[in-house]
Image (cartoon, rainbow, N blue to C red):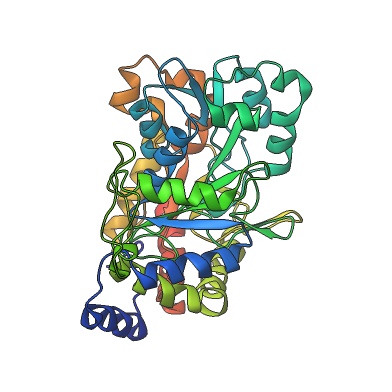
Length: 399
């Protein structure tokens, strides 16, 4: 069976983890801090904090910004449930909008229509690793008409003076938009380093801060405190002579990254540009070349004049099929020992949001894209022979 997305863990990464285990420092410490620095250097943003998940990162930023009951956060209907769940955790309302028909990303036109005086945050999602149109979203929130609607209910909201743009960049670490890496494309971005991601730390994530009107260093300190139960000193800080005493400033969370996780990430990042991304691009290019010969294949955008994907997911769509037919094609593919997936079931199709009154009929483009989509295997150790097997299996299964 060809797997869908096994993690790429090199011997060097294993050795780095062993080094951490032998060091006596396995929780948040020097390697986590180094990983944060390396991410900041790679992305070009202003400051980075590593956490135990992207989900924690999204929620910490919402809470830092003061999002609460009565507020609205605009998100695409086409995303993983975590994007919406964190909004619910804060007591706010997810306002779902439809997506583009060509690239799975949030529609700027739909965002504009959804903004109200209750809107506090917009969360674009870089589906499959292709960045959203951040220049247009950034321009939108700075328009006088949109800013005049904004109502500040916290000090941070008052200082920003407009809707916050929080990029869910869980898929797009290493992607580019107009020559800039994700992480520096808008106010703040959140990455995922989950086991299935291009760059993995087994479990983990990071917040890439890139604010213009705030002190990013101070926000980093605030988030560091909030990720450690509200405690104003982490374990590393308390090792300094006479520095044992600490205070707890708020009822925070347990969301820190450990040095064990950071060890895996440091080695992954070391070779990310020279090995991982090029190999993923090679695989997707082979898919593009093979399926472009068939009229039934709708190819994903992986690169154009403004955007370069992180090559995270290959989201093939089959033209002129219904959801049931797509499911039959997937069944045929699995019967030939090839693993595939679907990214994603739109949020209104999930019981938790269906039961809250969201209806998939209100998001026709999201449903259409989902109903015809099949994600194909893309991972570093996928051989050329296996790529050919995937291609032939898909072609025969569609036929």
